[in-house]
Length: 219
Image 1 (cartoon, rainbow, N blue to C red):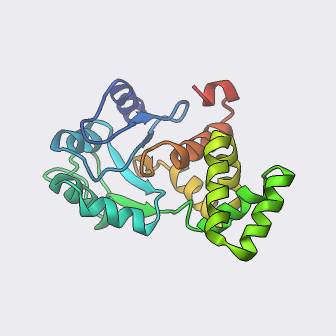
Image 2 (image 1 turned 180 degrees about the vertical axis):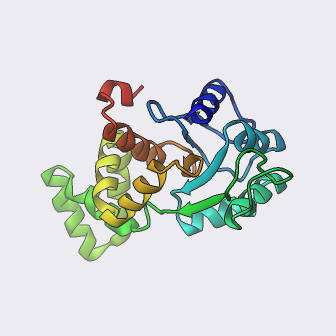
């Protein structure tokens, strides 16, 4: 517990160079959130491994997002992710020197079913827009998708978040929540591409589970 607390305190005021939106998740010692890690610098990697003591990564992105990000990754970013992907050992003279065990990375795509997400958004549109979307679905899928994406951009986070929760299979949410909640093997970092929507929803659900008030979750 002291290691979790000390690493959380150290990370609270730390800004990384190539990894955006890194910060602890409130009320959950040992749990961090951020954007993707492909642009990590040597300083970022050292901080994540030795100061924040991240031992498990939960990557919420789809395969195509990961492939695009890794195509332009820094050498350090690739090496850091390779260590997690390969289950590199933790300990003296290892890439992560504090503690024991291994590094782990889990991919849990929360938007794996994009069509399901768009269907959920369409189902939540006002009646007139919902009927328009249903018509386009039979004659012009491009216009259907444009209408739904426009609704998402106008509906802000609430429409996206409720549709995201409804469209991802329960087993996917259960996997993401259970891995992030289990910090017995070391601290956990959850992330998506920008560290905002998917990461934010997962963090909010975890905070809700431990009893955080809504106003504290949105801070």
